[in-house]
Length: 124
Image 1 (tube, one colour):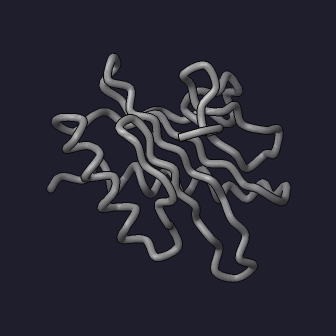
Image 2 (tube, helix red, strand yellow):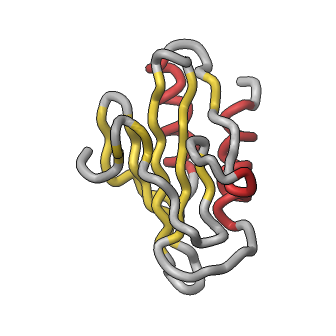
Image 3 (cartoon, one colour):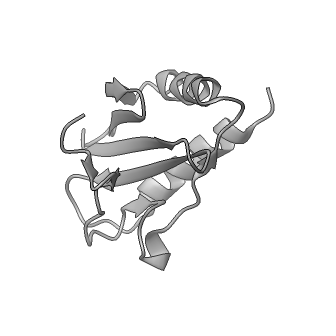
């Protein structure tokens, strides 16, 4: 999956206030990674089910260790990039949610990732 990683890590997030990542050093934009739930395959299937259930999110590309998706807002049709990186060594899923346009600080990306985290962590 070209251009989604830099030195084996998710691309750094920009200075836009709305962006979040599990791999950033910026404390106000840092979120905790998702722990594997069972095997990597189980975790990936669980995450994909959540993404597919959201009609605003489209998975654009997938590899063994990565999922790249785009969420399109309903009203303005803004597109946000969402990357998930499966870290087998630490048994976690790193993610990055970044707005392509705008400098809103309404916390849209953080709220999105908190909702995905809640759904992911729910007991089945």
